[in-house]
Image 1 (cartoon, rainbow, N blue to C red):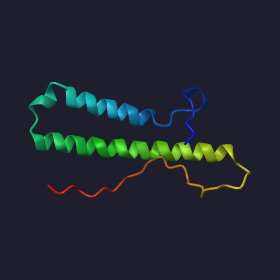
Image 2 (cartoon, one colour; image 1 turned 45 degrees about the vertical axis):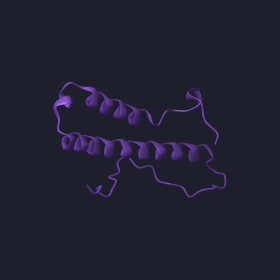
Image 3 (cartoon, rainbow, N blue to C red; image 1 turned 60 degrees about the horizontal axis):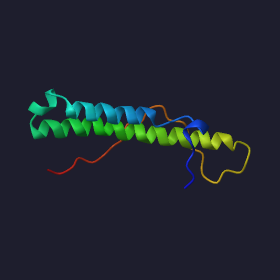
Length: 95
């Protein structure tokens, strides 16, 4: 896999990293220490779904940008539309 450097591309995943850092910050906070395990699980589930949504959006943005660089050439993959908002559906984890 070829990796692009920070200088050569816009970082499509910056909002996902921010979401992860925010979630870690919440889990490290004083207020999180008094939460019941079920409440922590709900927090991680809710904020984790948002993290996954942002990761997917970053991936789609990255793919769109790459495809735009090759505009006019025969695409090797199907063109995906740019998606500004996406609601993922993940099955609930059995307890």
